[in-house]
Length: 437
Image (cartoon, rainbow, N blue to C red):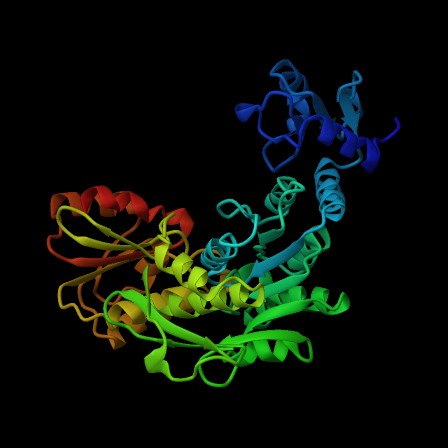
């Protein structure tokens, strides 16, 4: 059977007004449906249902389902989706900034988008659709009106970032940091470094530029002689910042290599973001905005207006407590900085609730033990640990095997008038604890 080429797919995509669908539970009238496969599903089986539901075209990769002129046959549906995204990206006159890193990808993406959208028509990855399916779907949402795309890229094994770069073909790159995330898939810390560094290597081949936290020696080493736009605190970088931590929210000042150096004359940007480790993420957004010539006042406005959501560095006051909800995800690096920040907060009535960190493989027990040791070292004594990994290394703190058990315990004995940090991996679903707090 003859395979539909990229031109045929692109023609169908444009006829559908760029409407893409991959889930028969959320059919979009007049869209092009891609029959993706997973470990437990084969959407080829739903090709007929997609057409009946109003899709204009369906893309399949099994010949027995390729019946009728509205069915487009390809060898591999996922590859076809990725190739279509790359083809579409190349038709548009816009620049792409790709973001990866162990921690802070989504926060950086949101902050950068807030700044750049003050001047440009931007499109940024929705939520964390940052994988081999999410990146193509983001690119396929681009239109001729867009001037800049901010594309988040996640990975949990070697080669994945390079594959996503091949699809998105970025002009600029940003690695937020290299930490202890997805140790199991990458094969340890050196594996993480090599895997995330694929973005720099891709950009070096096409003479692209990178935004780099220049105080970070690991990133410096990875970037080598590349064309770098720098930000940090210790030297005269392209953008230089100083944090001014007056309360739980991050406040800071910034300037550039060529502007005012008297810090007393510079305005203080007061944000609604919790966690002083987010200062460098804010400075990164300043650096990107400054490079793309967003007005200084507009940069400051964007960052002071930004409100964190999606359970990331989110401050929430309930009837009984103040919650610092950082429950979207966790790894040893992000857990460490969150706990250190929490320990340093000027508040005596604190409660720490943390859940297991996932995807650590053989490193799991050692990394969970280090976190418990850190808690003891920082003299945090009002602590709840959740999950089987923390239960193995518990040092006398209150603990529960799962989040549901913890919820029952909190309902039976609800905390009052406390500042509570909640952090754990996505799979722990710690945000459900809010109902008892």
